[in-house]
Amino acid sequence: MVRPRRLFSTRLPALQKVCDSTKSVDWDGWDFTHRDDLDARTGLSCAGWPMIASPTPDSIDRAARLLVSGRLVSFPTETVYGLGANARNPDAIGRIFAAKGRPAEHPLIVHLASATALPRWARTIPAGARALAEAFWPGPLTLILPRAADVPDAITGRQDSIGLRVPNHPVALALLGRFAELGGEGVAAPSANRFGGVSATTAQHVAADFGDEVAMILDGGPCRHGIESTIVGFTGEEPELLRPGALSVEQLARVLGRPPAAAGAEAPRAPGSLAAHYAPRTPAKLMPREELLAALGRLGGPTGHIAVLAHSVTQPPLFEGTWFDAPAHDAAYAHDLYANLRALDAREADEIWIEAPPDGPEWSAVRDRLRRATHRG
Image (cartoon, rainbow, N blue to C red; front, side, top):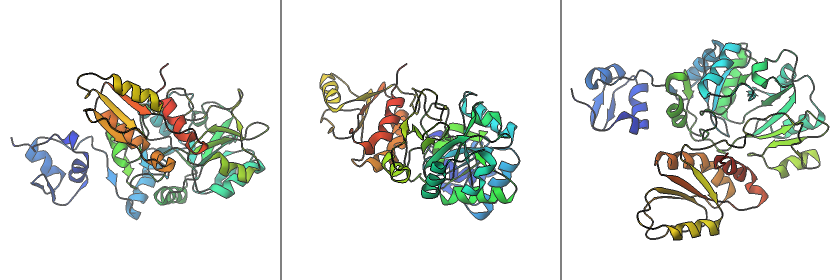
């Protein structure tokens, strides 16, 4: 039996075209009329391949109906891709935890079509939270508020608080809006990756992690920020920063009149706050510039077993491993961070060496992610 020259698993975009298309597709010189023709001619099957769909009105309607029926749908936001389920459906919420391998006590964030849905989920909305919502929603801000009485325990990790946000992505807003038209109240959606792993910033990242565990993946292209939302808690006497993110502390302070306090001992658990998180499978080290230079200088013999994500250090002439030069600007670095970590992980090196980013406040979210990605418990 004739087979294509390359393994499908190494040609993700091309396989997507063949398995998602109902038209003739040319792949490496092979013309496949449709996915059944692929199965018949190659002996390989598209079974298990997730549906990656362009965000047309029809596919958004279908995705919303899948959510209503209790299925999992991945969709893009301005931060990272989310793994969505009907937030009022306990069975659907259970599918998120099962697919991700997520601990039951780790809370989820509920995504809303607009801030008008807040009272359905929160029993009180402090003035500071309203001010932040008015200033930054839709946007990369999650508010932790006292939960309403009927909020399912599975979403909150059995805490007395709920995480809520309105994302700022046209595909996400269209999906949430259509879901609301069908009677849905909110979509619970953690990042669309295996628990503790590197977040997904493209539809292909999601497909690689979950396969057919997801009923549909809406492809909105690479995420604009590439790093998760900022989380601010309003469950105590003053606002608390529970996770740095795409929205800076300085931006929050301009609305609140002062920076939010650091998270205290009584602060609620928040997504992405474990010591080890966002981590590639390959062991990774976070190294100040001088430490990285010294480690590179000590390398002897073949260096192909090391992968490096550099910020200011120049690749040595004799270095034969994988070398990525990260962008110099904080926003561009954040945008590329998870894609870079996934690409470096795929090289299957013995270790990934990451040059520590600068110390400025604009780098706080990036430093947070890298510290957790390289944590060794």
